[in-house]
Image (cartoon, rainbow, N blue to C red; front, side, top):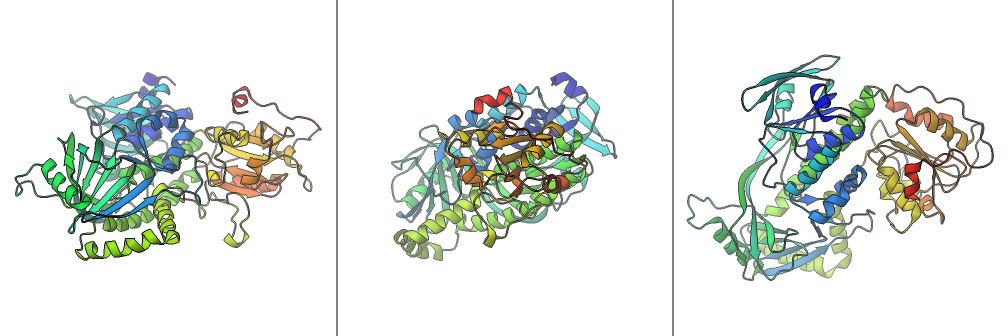
Length: 567
């Protein structure tokens, strides 16, 4: 895609070049759409609000093809250690045994670093960021959007696009012009600081400490000796003559019970955060994502992570509709799926906010009692670890009730493998030495839907391999069809020891349909034309699958050249 051509005649105008806008632009451009990306700021941000990247977001980066550029820039964190009035209470270590993932940790990485990687990624797809360009208005009809842009020197421009996506933050112009109200409440005032800290504490955990009247947090950066500090009750600088560094030194030393010295801060910010969200994320051809749709407490580090996953959810759906591979109803599932997650997130962050700040004086008395029990009862400690991780990691987010999830499995009927609505990587498919697992992760980087068919198996009327071959030919532009463990169908995916089929719960002739964002839409015991048709029906605007091809003995449809690397 040519950058200048996309800017003159964009198919999608993305407003906001933070992590959410960059992810949206990247995923649209990766799917071949012409994207124009504008931001009212004069250049990239120099300070970082978000510093925590959780496992599900790292899985998303893997699918985007950028995770190898992200990981070296951060520090892997696998523990959360709590202190109160100078006494260590408990260390909670990461426990992902019930939540399989290739990334069993939180990556502590400054938002500026994340954005730098994503800017390079969108540039590789021909997207040029236009800084100092502000959206001032727009109109839309059933055919497209006409937006008005203004530059810092007063130059005004009218641009036509098929779609407009607002990723322009908590004060979103797009949201306001759409008339979408942020519903919720104003909450607390906290302070963030990035500073060098002299301490004998090892930088292998996030630290939370209670001084007796308030709580603070310390998060270690990859850069040795540098930390993100969070003060949940910042002192009014007008009434306290001590500098921020001296205040933080005194508070942290009191809470941790050891000498801590905070050096000159590189950046500080006192802010009042809100807990608000919109009730819908789309009107016509205009959509919002990230902080433009919901703002909340930074207590559990969910804002950027949620926004990136929203952008990924939106981009593949928008591209499918625009390219004619799906009906407009597919875009309705964006709000359908993400608004409930936003509501749940507000509840979770409200709880996290209360637990992080714990202003009640009784807390300093009760905390040692409570966490002595937690520390000495391993079963309880593990349960808390998994509960906390499950909420923060994003790994338990699913779409079981989505209209795109067409075959449902009761918990009592659940067998091996991921059920519809879950991440396909919820299965034990994270052994890098296994060819089948490597092949599956390579498949998830394909921007299309994936149909995974276990080799073998027969059925009445339709032979599974014949259905798969027909689908591979008829829907090739948006559907990747793989035969797991054999050569009797399209695009074989090696599974020499059946480990992948076992993890996915696929018997001969069994199948999984996986969405472009890695969630299972449907599964079945035997692939047939009718079963596949029902699974694909919610996408809309699809020609019915033709009669299955006749399957002859021997290999079918050789593996494309780019797939050979996975084998």
